Length: 141
Image (cartoon, rainbow, N blue to C red; front, side, top):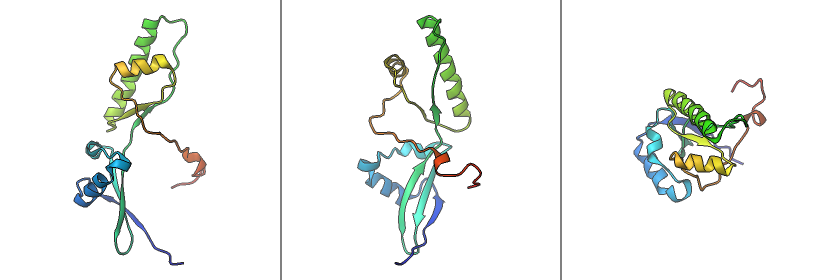
């Protein structure tokens, strides 16, 4: 078996070859060119000795995890607390160059509230990888 050495580098975000390849695969990758304009985004390039193998857009996002509100609050008080918590989290994200936020909602009330605040429901599967399962705690990679 012949071993091929692959090289991963950070490509310029306006690389015409990358943009053409990403656009050409839009049906499968749902490429959003706007993401490349985000301060936290990167465009990774994979090459071997003789040719370009592919590209991967990456971005740092704000993932809003779990919200817990006091059950003794009125619906209005809960809504106010939730909106203020989220507004603060999104403001922090914006300060560090993140331009997208995600929230996994399993509660119908939360879903309705998110939609009323212009959140988009993602129709594509979203997957999670817990990196601690891939990289040991003490690994410095």
